[in-house]
Image (cartoon, rainbow, N blue to C red; front, side):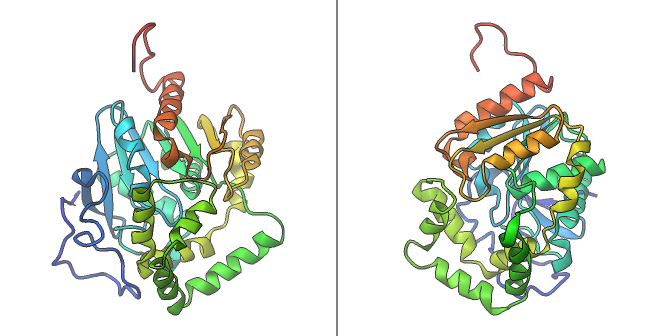
Length: 320
C-alpha cells in the first residue's frame, strides 16, 4: 500500500538510529523549491521525500551525490509541461531516510529506487540522472528493473576514476565516512563565508545565490554529509562500465564543456561503449549545467523524447 503525506510524519518511530542530524522538513525544508509538489512515501523500508508534478509520460529525475530535489528546482517545472515528473531524494540525501550504510551503494540504491517506483506504480518512459544519478539509472536499465524509452545522462559519472586518484579515493571516502567527527566538522565548515561558493566554483559551474543557499543548507547537515561520504566510499563503477556495451536503452549524454568534476571526454568514452548513443557538449558550463541553463537542457531533453517517440512530434510552425 502506498502511504503519502504532504508533511513529514512526526509520530513514526525511527527504524534505525541516526548517528548524525538530518535535514528536517519543517526547518530546512520550509521554503524548499517546488514544496507544493512534495510528498513523503514509505517504500523499500525507507521514508522517501518525492516531488511529483505535471501530466503526461512519466519522467524520473535522479540527482547526484550530495544533492537533492533542489537540483531540479528550475528544470522540473519546465519538463512538467510535457511529462509527469517524478523526482525523489536518494536514500540518505535531503529529506529521505538513511538506510544501513551498506545500502548506500550503486546496487543498493538501484534496488531501493526500483522499490519506490513499484510503490508509486510508475513505469518511467524517460529517465534522466545527474552525475552519479546517471549511473544508478544505467544500472537499473541493465538489471531490467526499469525499461524506459530513453536515458539522459547529465554530466553523468558512469566510468571509474582512473589512475592513482581512483585507487585512493574510495578507501579515503570510506575512512571519512566511518568517522562520526568528520561529517560534523564538514557541516561546521559549510557555515563559514565562501566555503560552499568555493565548492560550487570547483565544479566549473556558476549558480545564483538561491542555488548556493540550498547546497549550503544541505551541507550544514552532518547526516546528509555522512550519507554522501558513505555513497562515495561504497561506489564501484567498474562492473557497470564493463556492462555498458549491453545497454539497449537509447542514451543521450549531455555534458558541460567546463565540467571540473567529471572530465567532459568521459562522455566520449561512454559514447564509444554504448551503441547508438549520442553526445551533446554545452560549452562554458560546468558540472551543474542543468542548474545553470535549465531552459536549454529542457529543450534538449524534450527534443530527445520526440526523436525517441516518447512525445508527439512538434508540428511545423508550432511553438513549444
